[in-house]
Length: 430
Image (cartoon, rainbow, N blue to C red; front, side):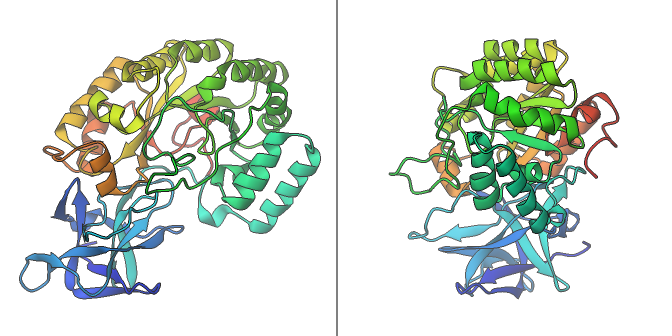
């Protein structure tokens, strides 16, 4: 892009229009800014546009250069697909009776020369969750085959009927296709009370969870039964504990440990990963001792005072997640953070310094720059942040981190063992 695109608005009936009297803007924290032309990219395949009810978009008047509201309809935002990281959120003014937005990301979107644009970068070359890579016919066939092959396995039933067929989970669909990362939910319970939890929300909350949580504790036998064949036959295979449809997998660490031991009796292939809140470093150590290859610890911030009011942890502290990363690195494992990117918070100067310290203290291997799926106003209100401080821009922050820590990998997905131990720039789904 060499010039600013135009703002979008919705008529409330499912139709989206451009307003050529206003240039689009982007939101960072509580504030609205012009977006540099080079930070707009075409809306990637698999992206969606959302109407934001009860909200008026903010644009820059093409004649006066002043910011004003678009009164023609509701504001519009984009959900950008995996492998992309948003740089600005949609900018709008929220009316008093506006409903809380559901748990999706709200990236700034615009229109130019008959195309939709978003403020984002492609942060990951791996294609494992590309829309074009899913053949519904093959997924149906793979689902049927797995259910027939493991008729008594509760996890297979959950992954195929609930995750794959009902929620169209990309990881579960890939498992049905016999490729790449195999999801292994293990825990129906959690030791955090994240305000943006996607699998459990109290009835009194104004938002609802986007999916139902696992309702049983799988056995090690159920886990091993299908993960060993996957590791043996899938391209770039990963077995990954800790999914969006469960609580905290470290609460089931004994079962996971037993599973890893048994898996490694049958195959040495592939990678064994855990996605976790990192709350129990001793459990992480026990898993590393039997063959855990990688960990991804989720966090909305490298700062304790921002982390804690969002996660609302039970019986653990921010320091524990730091220690868990250190433990994995002490075993030579791959340590990532699942970093929830919120423009205006993630790219603040204070956060940048905290992230630098976290990288140095833990010898961090990778940052997965993930889009934060949450209503921006609601989130900032819930964690009681009125001022986000001086910000540098998400893209500039990425560039500075990459410049200072060139060995820290950027991405969106857990890497397979081939990528961990081989060529990071080549050994992945492509």
